Length: 592
Ligand code: GCU
Image (tube, rainbow, N blue to C red; front, top):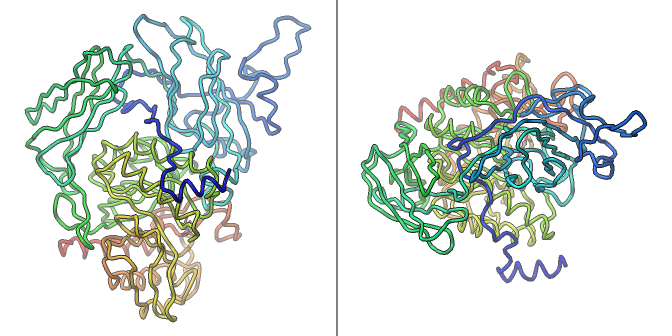
């Protein structure tokens, strides 16, 4: 089987995921019922739950009835929230946990109901009233299942088995440098829609145009003939279109708009309605393109003053999910003087993306094709394509998102290149309006002071991402100043990672590793080196805040944390934070 996938891939014809996303777009603009809160949870290390029928939520019917599990008697876990930081004994737990949420609901005619999960890591199976609704793979993308026919008028019980066990054929695979937080990590809700409803839509400026909007609306169960209208009241726009046999209405029309930019993050109220369904959204309009070695925002070259960050909660740790978490994290990003942020290494929560839209922060969004994965396994490709499709499906109307990243630090080998080339094709098919990139770290060394970014993947990318750890994982601080960089591709370059670790408050000489002085010194050398790099269009140093990682075990220094943050996990700003802040101020003042 593997052999033939490679042949088909080489022939450029494999496309494991063909169906459009089943995700309902813009849940924040829908009628919903939240199911967040305390859920009963059974930790099931030996995976007995399925065979024991936990999904049936059985309770003894008589004093002699033997039922060897009980949600009622089980402790709770908060949803949303990873389980690792909620209970000490679950900090290192990897395996299945069964969650139950009981709720009362009043069903109504002509109202369809979907159960929606913002995310759950990693493999999730959902049951309602004992009936299986569906399965989802991937820890960072949203999913919903229709529940209309199973929902009762009265008491209901929703059960989700969530298993964060790492697998060699999964995305990501067995090794990654972040904590494998398990659980239902984002909001859960019921979405109520009319029997014919607006499934998804794209309302963006036509590529390369600042005055023409093009897009589509995809209906669910359209009753033809059916019309769709798109309104932008503030811009005096109200247009109506017909839905075709494929449940889609495609459109293109002129509009006079203020363009979205970091300096002016203008969002418009956009109203899409069809039949009994109406969806409100806030959408910004901007163009993003590449011209030679430049990235152009609204036709003007832009320098991306960025930082990389994980979706780790400040202060309390664990997976970030709330608007407050996003406000703290992106507030620090703004304090740094950034106009850009790299959400590493997986799609972050919608609160962060929508806040970036409002704050005027451009975004790099990525799927977790991280380090080495099972490149020639069709299941792995299917999972990666589905995660790519669903990442794009949720955020393709966000002006802030300018780059889709396919991978991070993946080894140069034929099956990997074929795999990622397929994803590049998919990404352009799913969304032709944004730029495609990847974070690469494969360089040719033509001598101690010369590096060439020569990864063959560069051929299919619009923008080259480079992770380089000069002065940390390779070369000495003093070598950085002499380092000459070349690119095998004449495309814009983003240095997507550089950095070094230092716990907050650890001080010493500038050449004493693990001290703030060393980290600051490294930034000083790195910043002057990157300024000499060819085609430099932006940087996102590694990393905004210290984060938990099972790969960082140095006692008294790391203690299971990656300490490359410019801010500690308790919000303390390190010396290098101010070094980068000053650098960005200089660049911004110079109008770059
Ligand atoms: C890698 C990787 C990050 C990791 C970082 C580090 O480049 O992309 O996920 O945390 O380096 O080593 O600190």
